[in-house]
Amino acid sequence: MEKWLSSLGIEQGSVKPELQKAVSESGSTLIDGISHAISGLAELATFLTLSAFTTFFYLKDGPSIRAWVGAPNGRARIRGSGRHRRHAGIAARLLREV
Image (cartoon, rainbow, N blue to C red):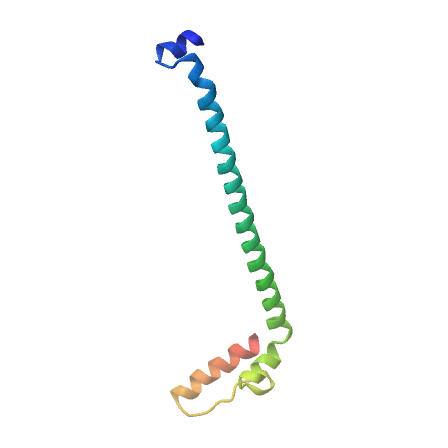
């Protein structure tokens, strides 16, 4: 091994300090990567929790939310005539199905 290192122009005494320097730098890089991974997992957990929470209440309280928006009893009011009435009918059917 010593012959191989010396053929590359590396002195025997310079390897150990360089190795110690590289190991100490890699430790801080590893810790930095772990902290970023934990931060990303925390963000994902927050997103999934809020998504589940809002989905639960939208499904549970859907009729009352639609009534608060302006569709009493979960049904949209149909106003107007002709084309507008037809589109309102489509919206009413969609609201009933949800």
